[in-house]
Image 1 (cartoon, rainbow, N blue to C red):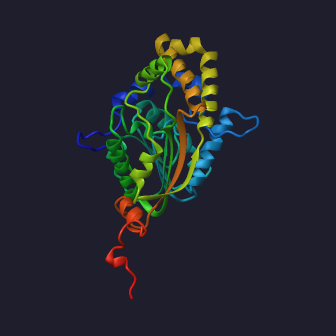
Image 2 (cartoon, rainbow, N blue to C red):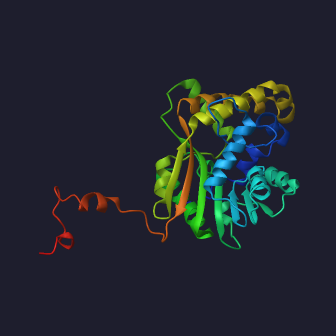
Amino acid sequence: MPNSKGYRGVSTQAAAKHYDVSDEFFRIWLGPSLAYACGLWTDGADTLEKAQLRKEEYLLSQAGIRPGIRVLDVGCGYGGEMRRMVEEHDVESVTGITLSRAAVDWTQNLGIPRTDVRLENWIDHRPSAPYDAIICIEAMEHFARPGMSGRAKIQGYREFFKRCRSWMRPEGRLVVQTISWGHRFPLDVDILRDLYLATTVYPECNPSYLGELQAASDGLFDLVALRNDFDHYSRTLEVWLDNLRADRDRAAELVGPRKAEDFERCMALAVQAFADGWFYLHRLTFRPVPKPTKPARRFLINNVLARDSLPTPRFLQPNR
């Protein structure tokens, strides 16, 4: 992620510290799909696996996934969406990029046809041909690190949007699912202590504000659909937490008692954080603008047309 200091987003080392610990450890609480993202729940009786499948279908539908298209999956995880796009939607090809070596190895071992999985930072990606769709499911949280200013974050996000715009066909779609900052956290010592712990479990991770993504995409994409499903993440996390607690001894054997306990504490905090709206879960669908432009000059629009409070510019005066 380029800025004045050449920041490129989360480092491979930081990604490995969180993700490359043990596939079996993640299977304990994520379930057999290894879907490490918020599900999409119904009001009635539901299961984690159904919620994850429903989330996949919603996002793929928003992206316009259909037979014969080329897709880029940024932060492809364990390949669940890639497999579904090939097996159920008959896409021509899917390229998946991630900074987790464990995820690359796992997905490659699945042997999904017409897929290319790479250990690659998005900023280093060079497509061989335009994509018809790009999906990015809970990877954007790693595009900024704690301590970055809002301006620096927007600059980095805008670079991502610029690249996506240049990589895709004019009629394509970009679909993003991401954790965002919500209401201000209560100033509670225990909560702040657990938040600090979360920075060690999820190193170099700093979610966006929705306004930062809107500013970064301005003039490059139109935001055509938006959902805020923060309560869905609280429900997802409750199931993950129950799964982890049910097999706590096995988890400790796989990654060590300290790391297993840290994950459990972070998830317990996150259940409350999402339920109370401290964090949001945004699902956004973007459509490329026909011709990229600089961000809108809002001062001009907001004030030049204010004829009752400012002199009318000569070029706007009606011809007499």
